[in-house]
Length: 442
Ligand code: PXG
Ligand code: PLP
Picture 1: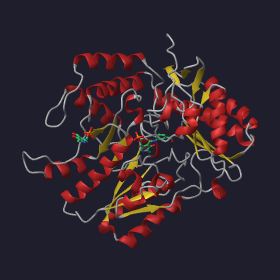
Picture 2 (picture 1 turned 90 degrees about the vertical axis):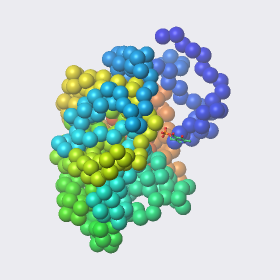
Picture 3 (picture 1 turned 135 degrees about the vertical axis):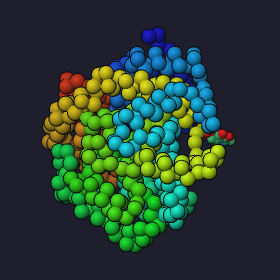
Picture 4 (picture 1 turned 90 degrees about the horizontal axis):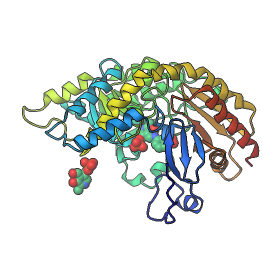
């Protein structure tokens, strides 16, 4: 591939979730990618330890996906899906539905995880209204939850900096469960921690406080990703499911990160054996080749909303210009075929034990305070530097990048979620690089 000159004006692009001034003073630019590797604008190979942003589960620039998108763009670039359709939209929905837990086979397409979350919250309200319980408008999220950046998502979300600036304009009638993270009880847990299922009982407290008749839905990430890999305690999700069912509250699993093989099954729902009523997707749905997200709804929810509309009337006043965009739909079909052909979810399941032991081998590395993992996700929490929270993990992230390994960091937690095509040697290399880097970090 020919190298283009690095652009010298970085000022126009206002970068998302970035320290803009710091970045532009010392940029890190990626120019191409193939399989497990990025290539930087200065020609260095960087092993991808986090699947881009937890999204490129089949590895980069896969020929089958690229070919599907290219062919689609020259055949049908765009078609409306408001009162119109195109075949790939329906085919992509059927393929997604096949991978969902039994009963969640009605698929609403969006363009991102944030849109999926806001869509799921709105569907929950629409469902209750359609069945004559329109007073159920309260939404329950969880501390430390990340549900994207829409007003709905930050309202149910529980990451303080994402909410603070906008606190006066968040949705009314929202409450939060406590998060499940507890190092006193669960430090260095491998897989699901033993302690903490009782934290789901806090939902009963919120039901008593607000009354079930006011609560529409509970939304949680089955495994919280963005906030630093928080693995649910054994039995916790089952309990949440029981309490929601008992009180007629919808359970939404935000599977934007866990969707499509991250835990070794298509969904976390399948992995844990707990079925929500609504399930949000994005990221790996089409290997992140074109923006796309989706909400999988139970047939009951779909039928209640759709069958309650008057004949000839729109049943749900919601949708995006690019819902089921032809190129995104083509990419999704090609991606889901690829996952199946290469048996990537089973591959993730079979790599998970090596991934776990390799991650936990860093227990005695400098600054390490906790290591946690499930499937092909791991988090390494560092002792924060005195008076400078986040600075140590940032330094580790930059040094790893310079050493040729891309990791994510959030606060003082390093997160790992490589493409599912990763091999054992690459897993060893990722964690060895982190160990070596941590030894040099102040
Ligand atoms: N829900 C969950 C559970 C997510 O992880 C979103 C919603 C929002 O998706 P969009 O496509 O609107 O970004 C996410 C996104 C990180 C990181 O490094 C995580 C996300 C996005 C960017 C960075 O932890 N998660
Ligand atoms: N703003 C304006 C003025 C619009 O016309 C539209 C869509 O028609 C939107 C926002 C929403 O855009 P999208 O459908 O891509 O979410």
